[in-house]
Length: 390
Image (cartoon, rainbow, N blue to C red; front, side):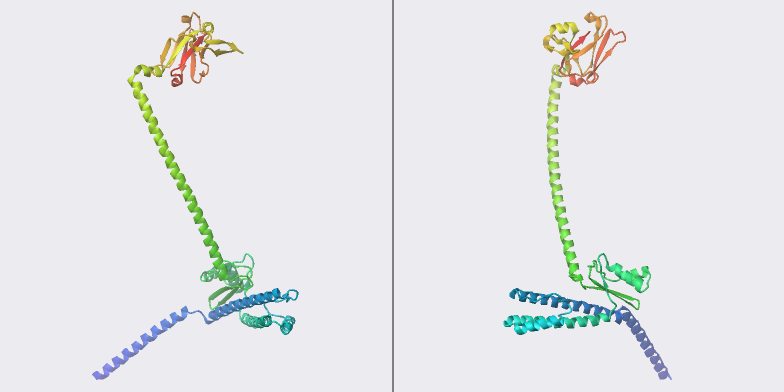
């Protein structure tokens, strides 16, 4: 009885193990299959790649024919092969017959071989075009890119207008694809949709270069522009550095001049402080006060011409008056001291000092006295003035 029970438990364990393995295998299989592209999508991509390969072969054959015919025509002036009407579909019957006749007539073996090669390549072209037509017949017709088209716009139009998908869902599918950054007129855009899977590819079509060549050319252009910008930036930075160095140099010169000025001013101050009389002399003015008649008679001032008194010989009179402008900035004049009843007119000479700018005149209410107030005292340091009263 014990043995039977053990066998039963062993059988249950075996079946449980098998069940777990089956479940795990099922999960792995589902995960693997879910990551595989549907067969239709793989087939679609293979067909598109085949179209691109055939187009490349056709372009190569066309280039070969063009080079061979050009070489033949160059060596047969006046008897050239007319290339009008030659196309990617190969030679027409008339053109093929013409070349066959040329082969028969050509005595030069090398050129006879050249013409025969043209005929052979044309035959290859015809086969390639037939194969291309057969492959394209199994695909949805491509969209031939026009000027201004983008891969995104073409794909979105396909999913929304031909498949009937809403724009939001269409954009989610398109975001999963590697789109070509730029379409040239003539590029062919191939689109596929099935089983919730969207595929889109771009081939050369009738354009002069392939999408990959365009991408490389665009990258080279971007790299060149970036290098140019880097060079310009470095040049500008060098200019900025040069200006900064010049600014620092000028600032250093300014600091040196300021230090020199400060040193000189300090010397002047020390000299002035050590000699009070010199300091007073530097900050004082000398003056002489007289009537217009007396001053004119002495020659210190001259009679007015056109109503304006002019400065004469300032040194013709004694400048007995002195004013320390550090302590006071005014001169008070009494009319009586000059034998006058009142002040009618007062002028300060030399006349380059401006009234109501450098100084101002204040008359007493009874006009028996006048005060000259120096508004810019430092401007009058070491000056010798003549003050005329009338």
